[in-house]
Every structure is written in structure tokens, then in C-alpha cells.
Amino acid sequence: MKLSTRVRYGVRAMIELALHEGGKPVPLRKLAENQAISAKYLEQIATSLKIGGLIDSVRGAEGGYRLARAAENINLWDIYAVLDIAGDTGEEAAKAGVPSEETNREGICAIQVVWKDLTKQVKEFMVRVTLADLAAKQQQYSRKGGKK
Image 1 (cartoon, one colour):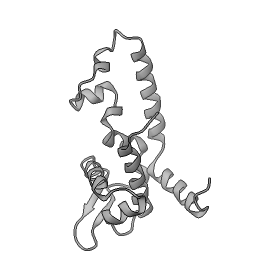
Image 2 (cartoon, one colour; image 1 turned 60 degrees about the vertical axis):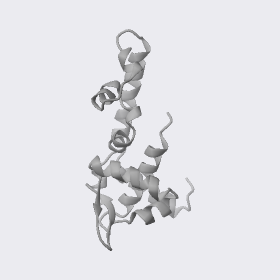
Image 3 (cartoon, helix red, strand yellow; image 1 turned 180 degrees about the vertical axis):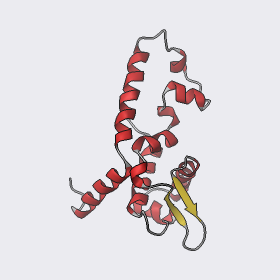
Image 4 (tube, helix red, strand yellow; image 1 turned 30 degrees about the vertical axis):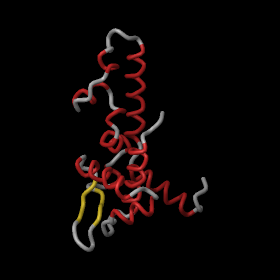
């Protein structure tokens, strides 16, 4: 399964925000620098995450971004669903107004059952992985110098 750059960068940014949970908001420039992501691109991602209710922005000299809810209450699917409409099931894509040739083939194409089951299994896995889990794993890697 290949995740879009938008999802991968968004997850990385969310992990960093989780690592700063309870502290001051993280300025976008600092977040982009720490994650080696273009600030302009990260701003687009942050806008989607904010609209999706996953992060809040704080204005002013001490402003930046922070999680909108506790890291243990945000899972990988939440982030994925906000950032990658192309990966949604046909039903979710249709709700978002995305036309799909594959969606139109449901009921007449045998592989649709497989794709639907695969999507269900991926979603079930992603729902079990919380942002708190990912932040804890990141702290482990950071303590070990980036080694597994």
C-alpha cells in the first residue's frame, strides 16, 4: 500500500504535535523545519487537519498549532481520512463528490469485493493505531538515535 506524500507528511507533523502535547503551540515554521517539509506544503496540510477537527491554531507571538484533542483519541485512520480522499472507499469518495469508475463497477466486477474487504481491514488496523502510540514509538527511536 502506498500512502500519498500528503498523508505521510501529515502523520509526521501530527506525531510531532503529539510530542508537544500539553506544551506551547508549535509554530508552523518550526514544525516544517523539524520535519524537513516545505512550510508552504505543510500549511496546506495543516489547513486540512484543522478543517478536519484534528488540530487547532493559536494566533499571536506564542501561536502555532496543537492537537484539537488528546493524542490517544486520534488514530491513524482519522488522519488518513482527512488527508487522502483518493484512498477512501467508494461510498466515502461519493459522499465527498469524487466520481469513481471503480465505484460504478460495484456489483458487476468480482474484484470490488476484494477491494472493499481490503479497505475494511486496512481501516480496522489504522483505527487501532493511536497518535499516542506513534508518539511513544518516536520517543523510543529518538532515545536510541533513530535505530530500531
